[in-house]
Image 1 (tube, rainbow, N blue to C red):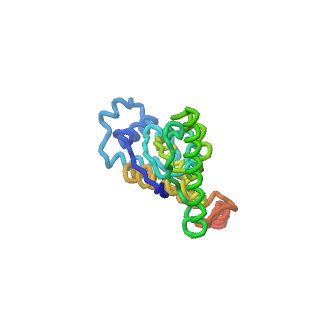
Image 2 (cartoon, one colour):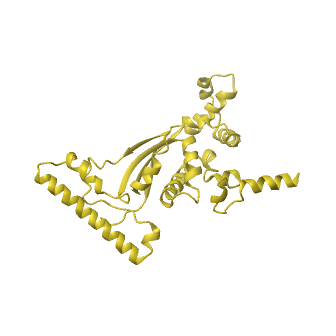
Image 3 (cartoon, one colour):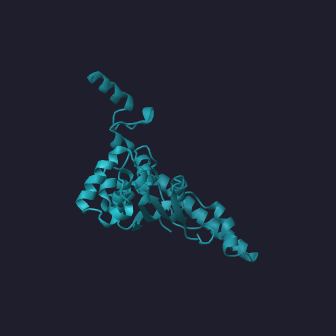
Length: 247
């Protein structure tokens, strides 16, 4: 198969998410019961204003009540190895044991795709791996081994560049954490592209929560990465020094 491209689709999000977050936050500061507040939750404008007030406060636990579920394809196994490190989430990934990968798609890094010689070598390697995988399956078949029993061992030759599909569910708090790390310029290019696309979809659906989401520096106003900084924002130490100077 030829190289494939990233696609992200929002499958579902918590119903009445704005009202749910509003009531969850209000419960923390009210003597009233959330069940009663839900019946008289206020209008949308009031809810948005309240959430915008709460977001900078650092009180994040109510955000866990609302979740988003995404369908993702056109990403590499190298990406999903990074993605599944976010443990406050649910994942359902295409299995290389049950799915025949005879004609697997693959992702080419831009640094390789833009160089004719490197791209030619990369594509040659992918073709050889596909041929080896098919040869292994053929040899297994000669021994009477087919299906998942053959796939589970033949898959050991498949590359990290191989395309995979995955369903991802995260709550708002974990999504903001994910975006803070993976929208950063220092994040690996492929997962950064995924994070940016997911953030776009979240902003469209729930602006009061995600309008300021993204790399840590954009929210903090400084870079916490120290000597690893990309230079977009001043370092934390410099910001502190400038504030002290003004005093």
